[in-house]
Length: 389
Image 1 (cartoon, rainbow, N blue to C red):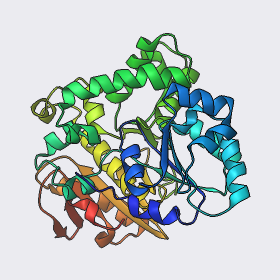
Image 2: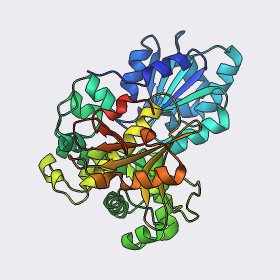
Image 3: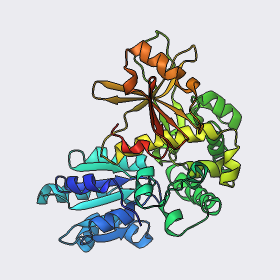
């Protein structure tokens, strides 16, 4: 149904590294992608308790039993952390490229084991839900912005033509009962779920651990740890501020966003695209959508995110500052469908302050037309991803 933008880079590096690690949230399409790219590889899933027990108890025998000449795909590899050391020994002994493809939905556990045992032997990729670009190429992107936001990008919704209001609550429940309990020995999942919903209500806002903890009835340190947990399992992310001190006093707190707006809408108990159209957080949801798309575009190229925000203590703010080499690209995000001159206020302030020419500034909005204006470039929500940022 769709082609993943990341596959070109992933295939290229599989010819250069003995191990490829593909991380991402559950149901983001990791297994489908690696099986299609490496059809001759053997496959095992460590969610299978029998496979998992063998990998833990006898990793050497496990690898000998499952690995074919073409290589081995190991799904949810973090379930057998001792396996990584055996993979290291095997690739060091045999040399060559493309021996193992490992996937995982728990970034923290995977990164910890990779850094300890596979450094220098592994190329790491993150696969997020479908991007605007991928949905457009498959003719799956809705022309209606509210519908696109409400549906999100998880592949299974499009593959099975599922209802977002039915699928996402079950996805959240599965995430809470499986991944959260596995990564943190939480007894009171209801408090964690309330915390997750509180985070959704703060999308697009500065992160304040003390406020989050107080509103949820937990400590500052617990709130900080739970946010880290949500980041490591690809539910949300915190966008860092741009530190270059043009105006002496800049905000240094991070901003909170979600990787998928369909999931975000579900946490906010938004039950339809029509309801979203009038929701008080629609602008913040749209901002989260665009920022996550900018991150997806970088990750699909095998690059790290280059997206920051800038805000001073007088309230002047630019939603995104992209670093591209020695060039800074300011981007303002507005959900309105009609371009207003006020939309350029922050961009113009930044351009004057940083000596950035207006032709390098962009406004991404909720309308359909692209324009070139004296204050900067205007890009529609569904077409901006075609540009090279």
